[in-house]
Image (tube, rainbow, N blue to C red):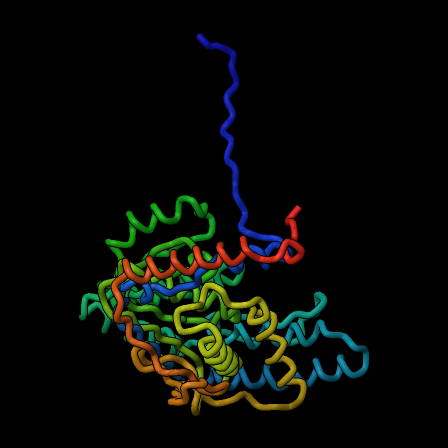
Length: 381
């Protein structure tokens, strides 16, 4: 028996956004604050960079591809103004080192420019795979879960290879993979149900950059570097947030002398300046010009100008080594400094008093706006 009535499931989605023209009306009514302003304290945050030397065969093929494809790209760019070969060069050297376990081709406009054979590595594994396994094993002995971020997760997916390496080197490791095929609204439930039984979770940082709590993990490992500062910073903050009870450590794994090392240098510089401008907890409001395209553009421009990749050197100083002691110069000047950060002020007031002061400030602004001259008040409509 049926009533013949059709039922439809309707779901509305509210997209964030605002017209720039109303900023001047909203900004005077807004109070900006950080978690620490409300009296909350987060556990310590540490970051480290681990430089991994490539296998000899792996390094040989990498530098051959780098030299040959870059020279070809420069020639095509000079003679025909064709940027396609630049893209082929950059894509190849960006992805090859972390996927050297399989045969690869450098292709441009359907033409194979270079064949890159698979590299076996030590005991059948690449150096970074071994280093990641060592990191995971150490974390497991201390009862800490590891969140591993990987960029090549689509047609170039290397997560199954990493999972195989972890199982082979650390047999006791329980490894899970979060796929993009799982719809966003189901990811949080999947993580809640699956993460407690895992030691390692492999995921693309873009899948978790917003809206998910991953406080059940305490260790973050960037197996590959994302070129978007916003994505990188947001992905890191999925773990270091309210609800996290343990110290959080982020490890950046990079192959020495590669394009990803150069990318990390640029990302570190951008992060330093962003921290100076917004504060160390303001990752969610970074501007768009620190995006992935901007980093790639800088790296390609350096290569075309013949500049070599920057070594790690002072790179560790560009990232925060300890959240309580930022790796930056600190100024004692009461006027501040454009090249150094001001010392952190202690939070001596309880949350209730801070909120009360915020309400008083907003009330004062409303009174001033109400008493403003009529000619100075502009209608929004």
